[in-house]
Image 1: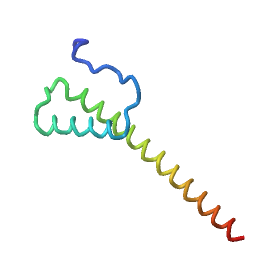
Image 2: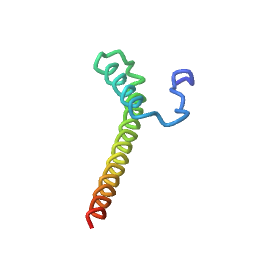
Image 3: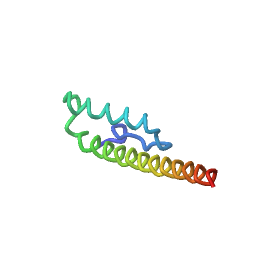
Amino acid sequence: MSESNQMPPPAAEPSFRDAMDELEGILERIEGEEIDIDRLAEELRRAAQLLDLCRGKIRKAEVEVTQIVQSLEQAADDAEK
């Protein structure tokens, strides 16, 4: 595979929305049979990376939300005492 056909490594981690948009583009190319069979494995690898990134962002957000809710509940309990 020539260097011009390879996707450059991302300069920075994409946002959740950007990752989802890229995943949707990959899915559309695969479903629309627009993708060359030689690039299929590369596209699937990138999709797996993006899925891992999105899952990590979701887990991080869940933890943060849980911590915020617990903090608010604790503050409410302290205020009642």
